Length: 128
Image 1: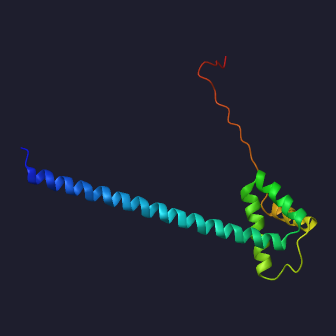
Image 2 (image 1 turned 180 degrees about the vertical axis):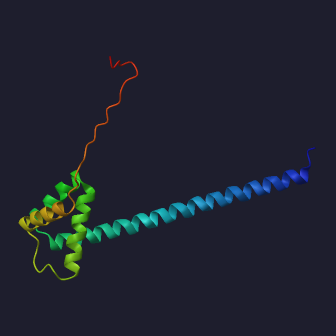
Image 3 (image 1 turned 90 degrees about the vertical axis):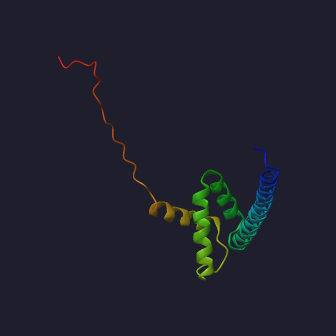
């Protein structure tokens, strides 16, 4: 049953598969590193643009919001950056302007919560 030729083919194939996995993992890690670098650079550029648009107090307030609600802070940053790119912001955004912007966004995105309670009868309860 032990055919040396068959065993040699299996060994070669196993080495090829291991080499492909090694190269594949290396390429995947390189791709991941490249994606992380691109993401980091985009985030740095975003922060630089925000530092030019926002006053220091507004940046501090936005940072505090980001600690509590990161998705909301990201949305506010997007709105501010979009407005700046369209030329709607002529001067630095102060903390008061940021607060009014936050209030506008809150009124637009307020969700109504509705609580419904369903009572179920227990099998052991008697209606007598």
